Length: 152
Image 1 (cartoon, one colour):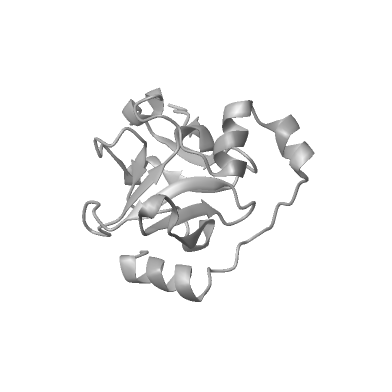
Image 2 (cartoon, helix red, strand yellow):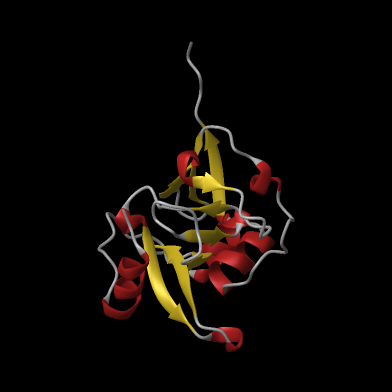
């Protein structure tokens, strides 16, 4: 389980190695993504709070990077934070997420990106629920939710 101390260590000393790397040109990203997805994932913008239904979805499923399809989060770690963005307490794998110190906008935060393609996802904070105490505050447009199908 990733802890706040792990997050700080990764941001300051280096991230875990990704299982794969996805590299595309700026033109390829622009052609693949909607303008809004491009602004968020490639230019590090933030969507408006409460602008996505994904905040209210708690059905079984997995959340993958919209840019490269890398699995990022699972529904079991999703919770209602009241912030207006989908929130999770753990990534699906320790090496799915990369962490970067972010001093923009006069704040100190830890930015989270897809460790495979460097897509901006959002930020992580140490004010989430137990057991991890983490709150990954993620732009909905940076992810695709894939429902778990019920084969009963």
